[in-house]
Each structure stands twice: as structure tokens, then as C-alpha cells.
Image (tube, rainbow, N blue to C red; front, side, top):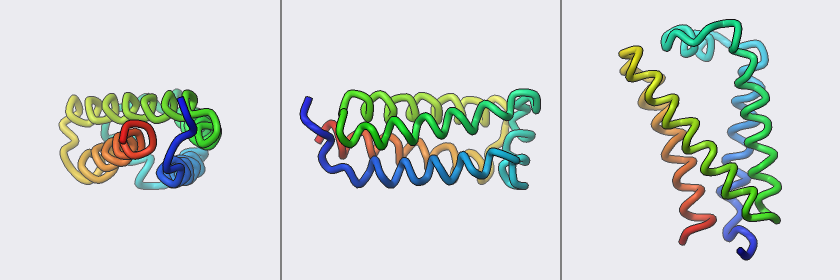
Length: 118
């Protein structure tokens, strides 16, 4: 597999993931509300920061090692599909579902398509 082309979607998605990771270190209000709304146990909130940092690292490495970038993109697609499932299960049909989970699923799938498929 040749290098990812173009790489800008990976860079954008990595930047978003790093920003999101920073918001999850000590969850800010809307992140805290999102976790509470889906009933995610507070004891496990800490897992989101390393997951998002590792995803960002994988996306950046993926600019030169496309198999890792593709794996990171696909991992984010799975992550956001699961997030959508959590929102639907909790009947949280507001902003958290439509803007956050579905929006990020579309960005992740779009980055996968533009950088690795097209």
C-alpha cells in the first residue's frame, strides 16, 4: 500500500481526536453530560483519553505507514458506531447523538474513504 493520499484528512481527524482527548482528561461539562446521558460508568471515564490519544498517534503515523492510518480510521469508525449504539440504547436522541457521535462517524468514514479508498 502506498502512502495515504491525501494526508490532510488524517491530520484534521488527529487534531480533533487530540482536542477531544484533552476535553476528556477532566471531562468538561458537555462531555460529562454526554457520559452521564448514556449511563457510562464514571469509574471508566478515564479510558477515553488514552483511546483518543492512541487514535491520534495512529492517524499521524498513518501519513507515512498507511496500514496503521487505515487501522486507526477503521478503529474510529467502530468506536463511533458503538457510541451511536450507546446513545440509541439510552434514548439520547439530541445533540450528543446527532452532532457528536454521527458527525464524528461521518468524519472518520470520510477520512477513511478520501485517504485510503478513493
